[in-house]
Figure 1 (cartoon, rainbow, N blue to C red):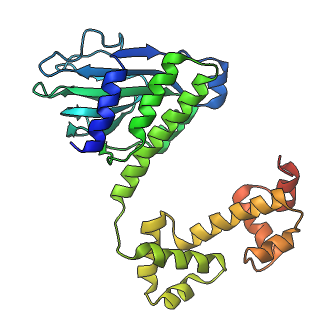
Figure 2: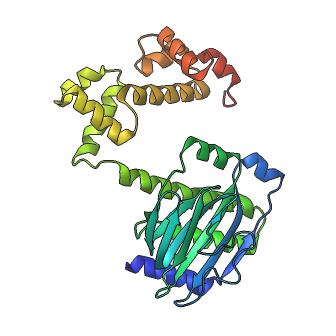
Figure 3: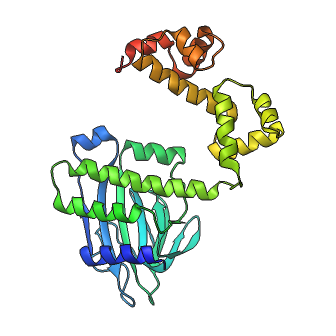
Length: 302
C-alpha cells in the first residue's frame, strides 16, 4: 500500500470511530436536487465478523443472501482488502478501491478475514442522482484512485462537518459528496480513454483552428494527418466530434457575450467566426430554443 494512502488511513482511523448516521431531508434539499441522506465509517479488524453488529438497520445483509439498496451509495476502502460481487461482476478490492452501488442492484461485499478493512460510505439522494442514473452517467465499475486523490481528505471533512453540524453544514456536505463522486467518474473516464503520446499539444492546435471557423478537413490537412485519423483522435481526447465541439464552445461563448456585453448579434457572430449574424441566429435558435435577441432579454445577467 502506498505511503500516501497509509497516511490518510492513519488520520481517519485515529480521529473517527465506527459510526453511521441518517440525515433526513428538508425543504432546502428538495431545491438543491442533491443531498447526503446518510454516511458512515467502519473499521473491521482482521478476523472480526462482517457486517458488524452496529451495521445500519435497513442496510444490513448476510453474505449468503446479499442485499439490494433503496438508494445510491458511494463506498471507499482506505485500508485492507476484500471482495465485491454483484449481478454484473466480481471484483477484488484493495486499499484505494472506490465503487458505486445504484439502487436496485443485488450485491454483496466483505473484507478479507486475514486483513479486515476500513470503509467510508455516503448515501446520496435527489432528482439529480435519479437523472444521472437514468442517463447512465453513474454506470462506473470499481476504480482504484491514485495516491494523491483528494477523495480521502473530502471524506474526512465530510465526517467532520456532519458530526459538528454547524449552520449550513448540509450544503457543504452535498458539495463534498459531489466532488467525491465527480473524482470517481473522472478517474474512470480517464482510465478508459486511449492514451496517445503527444496528443494534448496536437489537440490544442486543432481546437484553436476550429474556433477560428476553419473547415475540419482543412484542419486535418494543416496538421498533416488524414481526416479519419484527425476525427478519431479528436473524439478520443475530447469526447466530442470536431464540429460538435466547436459548435458547443462557440454557443457557450455567444451566450456569455449576449449576457455580459452590449454587442449586437452581428458583432458577436463576427468575433466567434460565424459567417453572419443570421448564421448565429439560426444555429442558436435550433440548439437553444430561442433567438439570440430573445434569449438576451430573458437572461438574468443582462
